[in-house]
Length: 277
Image (cartoon, rainbow, N blue to C red; front, top):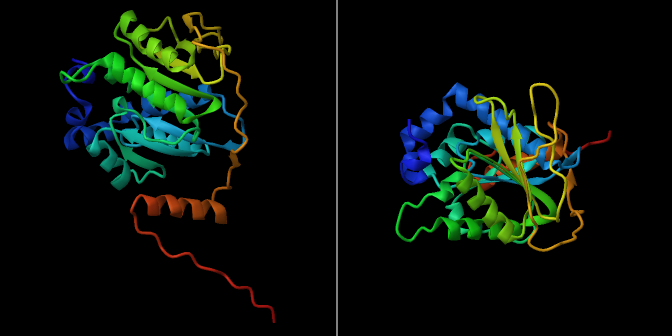
């Protein structure tokens, strides 16, 4: 069976039929959730602090649901309108969604994300679907725009399936050229079925890679460590907000605001006046 990225542009492959088939596949659902949770763990964001996470190649919102469950706000970007339609109309996700080709660059302001994740999406940029699509240039444009919209000291984690060492080096090379440092964490390296690759990128200079998962113990990953283009010393953003408790007034107001931005109908807020007799 051919890999989806070898069949043509993602916006054509993931049409309405494929989007619904993808979203209702219980096996895909379980795997996507597990990989998303692992990617969030690899971000190593502070506990009890709610951040804003960018979900790159968000699809039908499976990964976004896990981000929400972890107490973070998120924005999802995907090139397939059919996948995004499922996310809004069927899954009714809480994140804000944008239809865009990530290879054309990200449209966000500087320093607005506390982390970024991507599940099974980055390898699409390694393939050309037209004469004007140059994978090396598209990857560089993507990583440069990603670097610019992240807070300094934050991380981006990409779960992907490299088809070759050359492809993995192409992706990592573009990330390094854009300013990132980091390396690859390989979970369960001895298992053909469970083996997963995570490219962990830092915006604040060289850092030790997180430990890989194995069947026995957590071990230091020794696959490779990217070199840093130039040393950068940055402080973590101090603008993160604390979580609003689920069911609280602040939580409900924030949820309504997200729904309004998505164009969904929301009942009016009710003000309660205390009368003292």
